[in-house]
Length: 341
Image 1 (cartoon, one colour):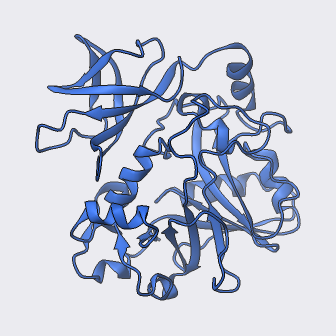
Image 2 (spheres, one colour; image 1 turned 45 degrees about the vertical axis):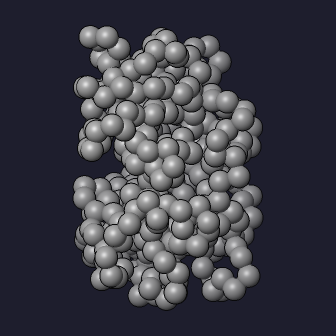
């Protein structure tokens, strides 16, 4: 069943989002101020449109470990990880935000993708002692600019996923710079009963998805379904650093991870773009990036930052010169290298 619209859309000034982010607010009247409140650690973001899945049973960690990219066996209670589900050819299908509470693993994924994930997990159960459930109707996600899983005063039993980006988690590799602009990023996601979502926000101001997305773009943080398409591999968007363990048991898509890391180079690379802000409108996500009269890639996310103005992430061909100024129609786009060619 589709997730019902968030009760937080009833807050003053709330403007509902569109597309995949429909069901929550794009902003509450002043998206630039909302960004500043997030940077100052004062606001929260309604992410209740994300799907929530639970995996329970004594084999839950070893089972998920065997099928996804991150090392999960022995994961301590109330500890979180990020892991990817890949296709047999190594293309990114799901980005899993996981928390082990000691009895079950809580997983949140992009809006609308939970049913497909549950269907795939059910097919992979075989005779293992695991139970999978889609619980999006009963539980909701709330984003907060906090740098650790738990803080004093958190409700007992509430699962909290801490975003590891841009940390190097486990035995992995980075395809971007060591001096990363998101170093010290503070972000976690609480999983709370849907009926208690407003209480979890409390008296804090809310920031909408436009604000959260602008800060994500500034931090070069990939998002499944935005920076990924049907052929994206993790190396192209520098996603090995937080979600892929390079020396663990075999899993679907591992051959591509190992082959590209050891022998090859990713065919595309993620770039950060400063867009010419002289116009009043932003280009659309998916718009073509060109060099001269030749298309070299496309925009994956476009945002307006409270300090930097119009910014974007884009995927371009690996051999595109790093100092080339790209264009989106009549708009110039100055690139900053994320994944080195």
